[in-house]
Image 1 (cartoon, rainbow, N blue to C red):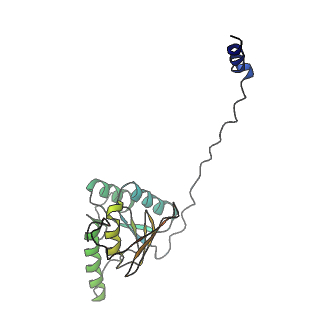
Image 2: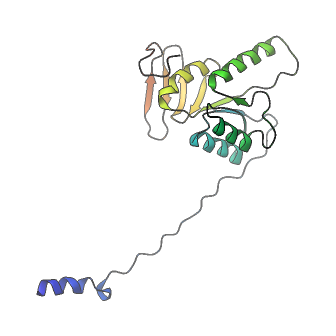
Image 3: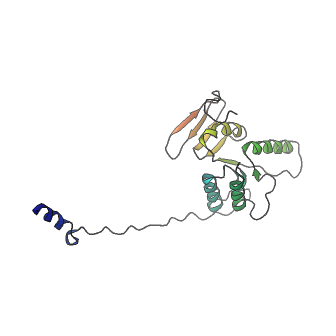
Length: 192
């Protein structure tokens, strides 16, 4: 019985250790948005899920870039991101709203044809594409989009593409993944 009493006496309030100082939570405030440049970067968000919305929020809140377009198969997600970050209460304009990345590429190819033909009033295209999609669809989209843009930022990291390989540098883990486009249909995308 004596060992039990000794143990209980150690656990009483009188002998209990003093509580640690309360943790102070510091709220990190984002940098203020810089002044808008004369020609701000125009960004396309491919995938309007949580990652796409987070990128759009960051772009609008702390950079002088503009979210110019969204490509997303889910109508609700596409309209939510577009209404909140692109067109507001108005209806979407030309080049702001795409059902998927393939539709965006068709639009962009047509837009480039009009630009090279010297047509007047052709809207400015996008400068940067943010790819925020599932891993199994990632490579196919990067290959097609990479024909127009040499550097693409995706949720997996920055992507560099050439004719032999696609390199993805993941800044979260420090890992570098290399995909080889000649291996078609081997679980690297949707087979495009």
